Image (tube, rainbow, N blue to C red; front, side, top):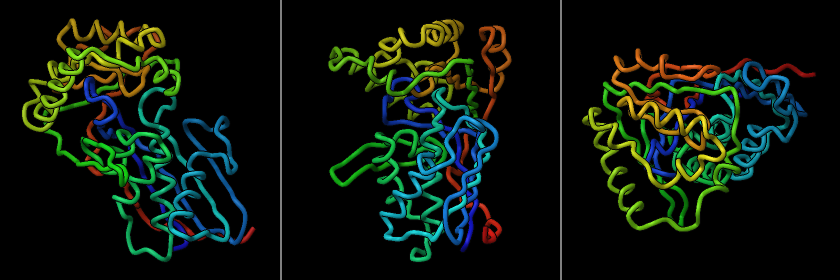
Length: 302
């Protein structure tokens, strides 16, 4: 193929207690078109990030594409990337993971020496590029994912989410760097807090897949949200307000967005609890994950 289109979903990681090991794919997507050119590089960006994101080799999608090409031992003569972005950036919805997954999957799909995208190999590479597997696993596989690392690299399992789980993401105007948020975490945690989160993480699997009525208890965290409150006080205050009203709320990824897992009917009460300046995105679980859609048109010579 000379061109492919790749669609990648937004994600929410941690889901409360499952720090760095759980993720949920959401029905908000970036769509990227990759095509082989005779020479050179062309990058076009529309939607979120247009005018702000780089359009050269430093673009994260291009860097991920090149890393995958090196892994595959293949380089195209030239490359065209056209990105239509809808995933909010710097808000804890997995925009960087989506970019990394899109670039790697795009290279895998275009490479003439492979027959299909190897999810296991893509997960290992995207985790090395992203730093941890929670967002990239959910973006790649869809549904809910549990991920971990072994000496041979990252691994993940996909879970089918119960039909009664409806995610709503409350998104503020401001952004927060994942690097800054992670820098606020303590090196040591109390044993009681670790045991609390281990129990809630186990319950989270049951709640997501079998019994959504348990999601409120299952999303309770003691390890990372409160510890990062200084970087996102409004987000933590919103989580507290939502949970006081009985909603299964948690910081989405590193923040500052807030994820609420509702039964559908509960979403109607959220606008009254949402601060001014925040937007409410009622989404669904993306069951597919990263998807190679159709062949893109061949790029003509410049």
